[in-house]
Length: 489
Image (cartoon, rainbow, N blue to C red; front, side, top):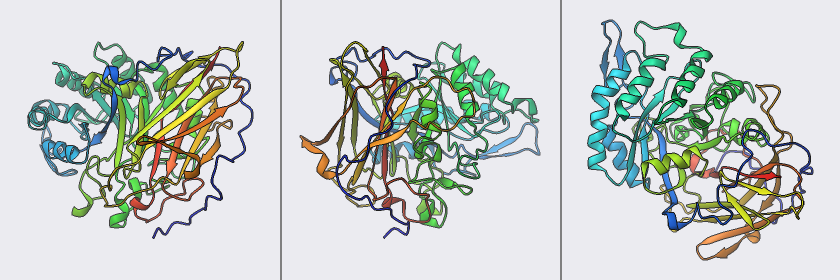
């Protein structure tokens, strides 16, 4: 039994009072042209897109150590993470992933290690485990910030491109060290440079609030850094980990995610888990800012580490073809949902109005001249068997969360959106079976302003995800969608 204090969900049904009326405000960055074409052809099987599970934050033996008593520094494998690249790929396949990425730590002259040692091993792993698309990239030593995914598009010069970016911009790559590489200005310079490349990478922040010392007391990563980076390169700097890795920490007496200062909530970073918090503040500006879930696998918990294998506990699902470019396109454009413990295996969130529809990452445009009711459809699928703990987890509640889009924040460090509310909670009596899926429908009446909607669900009785203690992560499972946007014309 969990040792967390459970907050009982009293009653079944979509009975929560609606949020304050959706009034006022205008659209921010993108006016949100309806990319679905009004009939969902972008999402259909006709283009071969299905939900594909993956992990963009995994470590191999190339997360090693450097002997800096020599010049150049001497690299040794296996100091921080222990598994060969191909082992991670085999385990990713075993736990149901179809795409993955090793993101090894940098260090002094690590760009050369990546190019000359790690990349040949990646090429070998691709040949040995072709069922898993294996991206090239690293855990980027972001200037003035915590680590980030740096995902390189699959192309003939991918190794040279990563070498170019790491050697020029990673804060820990110079030897001797160079303090000028560790500034916010350098991070902005990196993103500007990346934006001008013909093969554009993706950048996603890792464990963004791990260094936070309290609720809303930010550490290495701050709201204004996310905003400034996204302003410079909105198609490159696209989000942060909603559920960080190291989720097996409690199984060896540690904290979930390695969050030793301020804990995760239900396994999710406070930036994501807090309704009306930082994620909602960014979405409330109209930003296309997405969340993911990763393993951050270094050493499996059964060997004394704090990690699960890639896909064993956390999964990031992307709606895409089994194609490198389309996986990156899905990540870039928010066709993403995440889960822990295989609570569900499929999730669709659709907004419909005036004969048009949009799904996660997309925007539906409605006219003020017509009836502006927006029907939200939530469709999820339960696993057919047990998860990797041998459990059959059950969804006990699904929440629909809605917030207004009110435009750019005057304060770049704003971290709340007071318009964001849980507008409805649904229990098992509120969804109906349709084939293999469970379906929920809810109507937002007379929408008057630009808004977004997102969904979360849980196996627990908690009304809001509570701060995590030492309970087993398998007893505390959640899934989250990325948002769908509504633009009122």
